[in-house]
Length: 147
Image (cartoon, rainbow, N blue to C red):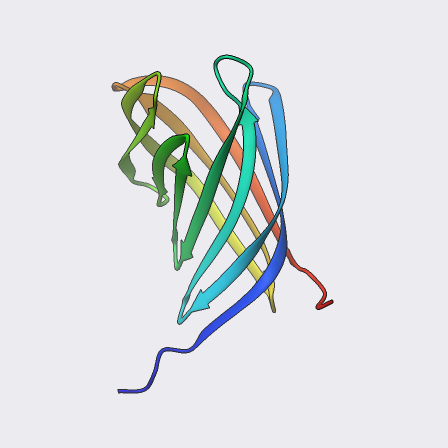
């Protein structure tokens, strides 16, 4: 069997989220790993915890044909899957709370230009089967120049 081609390189990540008129933007340095037809984006971010402390979270985004998976590890853990036209299960866990959730993806668009990537998706988030909000996300990945 031929060996699976793997390509790894440094990237800058910009993730913009819009929910009910509220915009949040995350900028992070990370890495992209290409395995066959799948792309994995990994980066670390910190966000305020319940007591105002900064908590560190490692995020992995797996992008494949027509689907996307968002996995977060660290002080909080969550997993969300996105596939247009499907409602998929996920979860959220922290030391303070945990709940099951699901995502009903309306749109997923992946544009790849060499080692750059632009991904946008829209979905309804359900927590315990109750509609929690509508989200529009855009993710931009740019290769970092070699130093």
